[in-house]
Length: 154
Image (tube, rainbow, N blue to C red; front, side, top):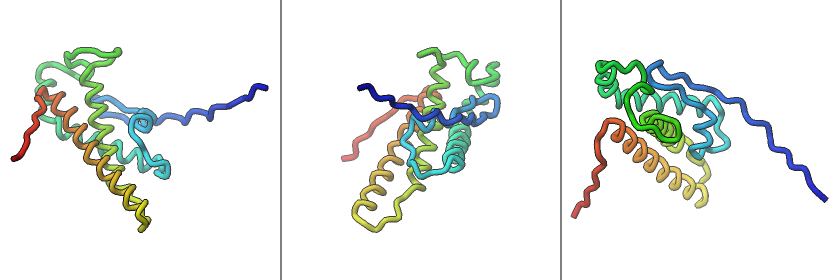
């Protein structure tokens, strides 16, 4: 006997527009790339993505000015290596924005349960927020052409 398993229909995608220089981003790609709590509304997730775009573009404002002065009318037109058919810079920008949005969601999606399990979930989310911010910082530094440094305090 063979069983039929139907896949649920794909959720319609929302494209969050960039400002023309920075690329637009897919809400579905964000949900697929970052662990998003299932109880969050699409509006809240989109708000976090927009906030991530704002934060990343502010961090990269002076870098963008340099690239525009050199003639680049969009991020896609800045000379950079291409991987999997996409500019390294576009990939890193998306990674930075997704990580910043993920940190925002992790910070604001705390479990209100007073149980040990609820406290543990909150601790995991706090760790996740720190990791997301670290990933965003690394992507932004890479876009700027800066290296990553590690220091050990003794």
